[in-house]
Image (cartoon, rainbow, N blue to C red):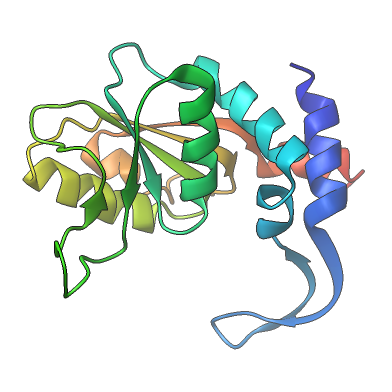
Length: 176
C-alpha cells in the first residue's frame, strides 16, 4: 500500500478552503470534510485495505462508530469476513434499545473502527459501554489520527490507537 499517495488523494479530496464555522462557533479558512473520502467507494476501499493489517489477531467483531466508522467497518468486514457491529453514540430509546447493533458482544473481542480521532472522545465512550456489556476492547483503528500528543483519551483506558494516516501525513501531502 502506497500510503503517501493515499494521503495525497485523501487530502486533495477532503481539505476544503473557504469560510467554515466549527461546532465551537470559531470561523476557519480551512476545513477537512472526512465524508468526502468515505462516500467515494475507491478511496473508502483503499483506506479499508490499509486498515486490515492494523487489526489485532483475535478480533471477533469490528465496532464501527456512528457515523463515520460505519462505512469503514462495513468495508473492512467485507474484506476480512469479520462481522461488523454498529455502535451508536447512545442507545436508541425504542425497539431493541441497544447501543451496539449486530452480534452479541459479551465475551467477544471488539476492535473499534473510527474514521478520524482527534480527542478519542467517541471511541472512549464506546469502549466503556462495550466493556460494560462484557466485551474486550483493547484496540481502536482509525483512518486518520489528528490527535495532539497526550490528547487522545483512549490512552486513559489502555486502548491502543492504530492509524492508517496522521494529520502530519496529510499536511506533508498538502505541502504544508
